[in-house]
Length: 298
Image (cartoon, rainbow, N blue to C red; front, side, top):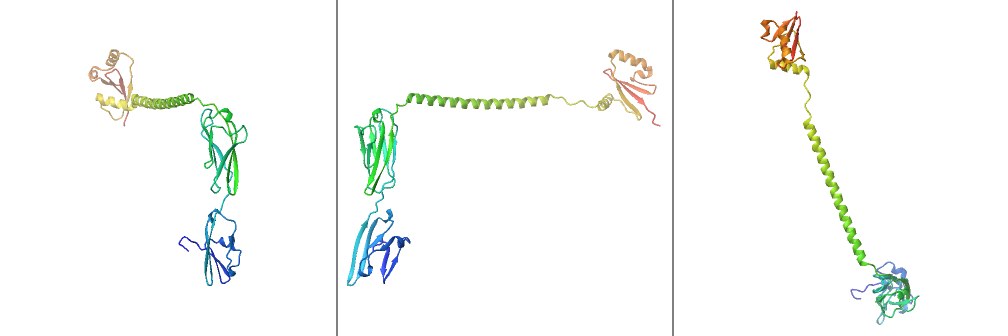
C-alpha cells in the first residue's frame, strides 16, 4: 500500500478485523469465503465519500494476488431552483436560470415550454450551465417554462412563469430620486435652523435674566441704622439716657427753620439745638428734625 492507501478491513486466522471509521464494521462485510480465497465485499448505504479505488490483496501459497476496483457513487439530482436573472421588460434580454445543488456530475439541463408554444426562435440554451437566454423579450414569450436536470441515476425539474412588463420610465425614476434628495436636504436645513433659533433664544433669555439681576437695587437699610449714620455724619454726640427719634417736617426749609429758631433761645439758637421741656431737638440740614427724649438715669 502507498502512503495514501487506507486499510479498511482484513481477514486473518478466521477473524475479520476493521480499521479506520468505526462505521465500517456496520456497512462493510465479506460476502465470499476468505478461507478459500474469495474476498468479495459488500458496502451498504454508500455515500459520495465512498467514491474511490479499492484494492484487494490475497495471500495464499504459493503467492500473492492483487486486484483493483474503482467505485463511483452517483447522487441523483435534487429539485432544482428556477429564476430569472435580471428583469422581464419588453424589448430587453431575459435570462432564465436553473441550478441543482446536490446531484453528481455530469448534469444535463434542458429547457422546454409547458404552455404558450415552443421555445422562442431567437433564444439559446446552455445544457451545462442551465441558462436559457431570450435576446428580445416580447409579449409572445409569456408562458410557463420547465427546466429538467438529470444525470445517470435520476432527474428532477422546476418551473418558472415568465411575464412581460413595460419598460420603466427611467427619467421619472431619476426625477423622483432628485426630488426626494432635495426634500431630505431641505428638511435637514430646517432642522439646523430650528436648532440655531432655539440656541439663540436660550442665550437671549439668559442675558435678559442677568441684566434684571444687575438692575435690582439693594434693599434700604433699617431706620435705626440710617439715623445712627446721620447722627454720626452731623457730628452729634450721644448722651447716656437719651432716646433719639426722627421727626420729618412737611414744611418748607425756611418755615421749618423759622419755627425751630422761634422755639430756641438766643443762647442755643446758634448751636441749632435746645433743651425744651426735657427734650433735645437737632436740625438736619435737609429740614428734618431729630428729637431726643431725656430719660432719668437715676
